[in-house]
Length: 156
Image 1 (cartoon, rainbow, N blue to C red):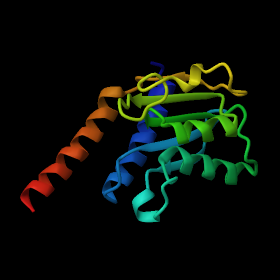
Image 2 (image 1 turned 60 degrees about the vertical axis):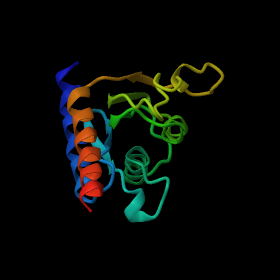
Image 3 (image 1 turned 60 degrees about the horizontal axis):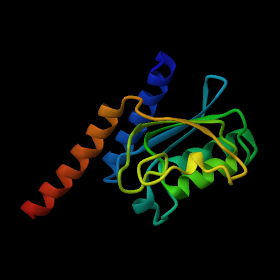
C-alpha cells in the first residue's frame, strides 16, 4: 500500500464517519484527479430517500459537477467498501481509471466477493481495481456500526 493510497483512504474514512453520524451505513468515497480531491461523497440513501445515494455515486456526482463533465477520465475513486453492481456501473460509465477500496463486501461486492465485474471482458470500459487498503480499519468501522445498531434494537 502506498502512502498516497493510505492518505486518500483516510480521507474517505473521514467521510464514512460523517455517514455514520447521520445513522447511515458508514461508507465514504472520493474522486482524485492529478493528486487533488475533486469529488466527495458518503452513504446517504436513508436521509435523501434515494436508493442510489451510495458513497461512490455521491462522489461521482460531486466530481462531475466540479469538473463540468460526466466523464471522469484519468480519475481515481477511493471508497471504504468494495463497490456494488450499481456503483460499479456508474464507475464504468464515468470512465474512472482506477478504483481503490478498503474492506471486502461479501454480500454485494462485485470486485471479487460475489463476482468480479471488473474482470468482465465483454464490458466496453474497465477500471483497474485494488482492494484491501486500510481494510481492517474500514471493516472495523462497519462492524462497530452494525453492532451498535443491533444493540439498540435489543435494548429497545
